[in-house]
Length: 295
Image (tube, rainbow, N blue to C red):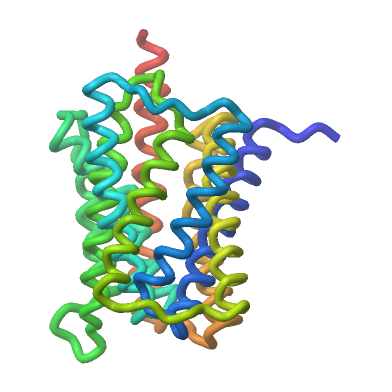
C-alpha cells in the first residue's frame, strides 16, 4: 500500500518532534548530575562531529559563502547560541511539559515578527489570533500569581531568540547548504559551552552521563534530518500543524522520566496557543491558495 506524500510528511514531522523532545529529556536528565555548561559542551562536541560526518558523506558542507550570507550566518548562530542557553537554563528549573507549552508560541511569534521586519501582510484575523495566543502564554507563565515561575520568562526569551534565528534563516541565499548552517550553530554552542566551563569548572562525567549526552546528540541530529525531510514532501500546510505534537511528547516523557505533569492552567494556556497557531496556519494556507487561483 503506497503512502501519500502528505502522510509521509506527517510521519517525518512526528518523528522529528519526538526526537527533539527526547533530546530535551536527555539534557534535562544529565543536568541533574552535571553542570549546565559542561553538558552543553559535551553535546555540542558530539553533535558537531555527527553533523560534520553527515555533511561530508552527503557533500552538503561549504564554508565559502557570499558576504551577505556570512553575515546572516553569524546572526543566526548567535541567536541559536542565545536560544540554546535560555532554553536549557529554563529546562533545568522547569517541568519539561511546561517549557514545551511556552515554546508552542514560537510559530505565532515568527509570523508577527515577519510582518514587522519584512513587511509581510498580516490581516486582522491572524493578528487577533496572535494576541489570543499571547494570552494563552500568560496563562502558562502567570506573572504576578502565586504559581509564577521566573524561569518561564527565560523560556519566553528563548522564543524571542528562535524568532531572530528563523527570520535570519529566511533570508539565506539558495546556495547556502543546510548542513553548513547546522554545523555552524553546533560549533557556536560548543564554544559557548567551553566559555561557561571556564567559569563553572569541569566535573568528570561518568559513563552514564556520556551515553545520555550522546543519545541526546543522536536524537537532535535525527530530529534535524526528519524535520528537513518533512518539509520536502507533501503540503506544508498539512504537515506543519504536526509540530504541535511536541507538547504531547513532552507531557508523556515528563511523566515517564521525571514524574511531572502540567497543571490545568498550563494545559488550558497551551490549548489556547495551539488553537490559535493552527488557525494561523490554516489562514495562511487559504490565502496562499487564493493567491494561486488569481495568479
